[in-house]
Amino acid sequence: STLCRLSGCLVTEVGCASLASALKSNPSHLRELDLSYNHPEDSALKLFSAGLEKLNLDNGEERRLQSGLKKYACELTLDPNTAGRQLILSEDNRKVTSVESFKDRPQVLCREGLNGRCYWEVEWSGEKTRLAVTYKRKMSFDSNLLGSNDISWGLGCYSDGYTAWHNGNHTTILAPYSSRVGVYLDWQAGSLTFYSISSDTLTHLHTFHTSFNEPLYAGFLVEETVSLCRVIFSSSC
Image 1: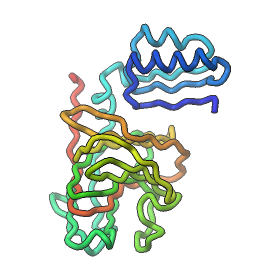
Image 2: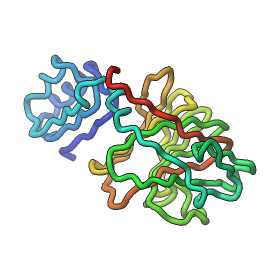
Image 3: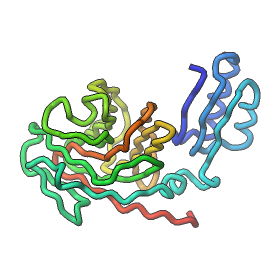
């Protein structure tokens, strides 16, 4: 492909230098590069000036990445009408607890349909869970498990790593455990990005690139608990 999307991937000046080196080794291949919501310094950006037809550097008014994403924070609430019978909702429908075995794979969706730029954070407990977005549909059968069909995209979180899921296909991600995960959706751009969060530091885990054509709903496959965090954006950050 002549297009490379790295939006929100925490690319720094060092990473830009590596990308520039790769471009120089194959100067006729890449024509468009998306580095929006990263940290490319001016000295590194100069290396990309040759050979590219389009370079996207929208950095959210040049604020640091955490603030750039948090300004898109959205308030989500769980929808009781979509909750499996093994699930209990609490804390104003911002927390879900499973009261039975995970083998039944209980799921729940949020109420809000998303079709813009949205960012949310989740705390989870247990040995595993799955965070996802999906087009609205019933959730009764295995074919409707989040990430197991062609209308949902998800991240499996485990005590020893992560797995990206879509249409039943999965990609293993080696990264340290974190009980807090951030999700950034850019609906129009067709990107969905997951981050692990530790001490207010975001680490990129995986980005899906596709074309969305309906509103998306955040959803969860729950083993123990999943909580929607309140994300506060401060313009002074």
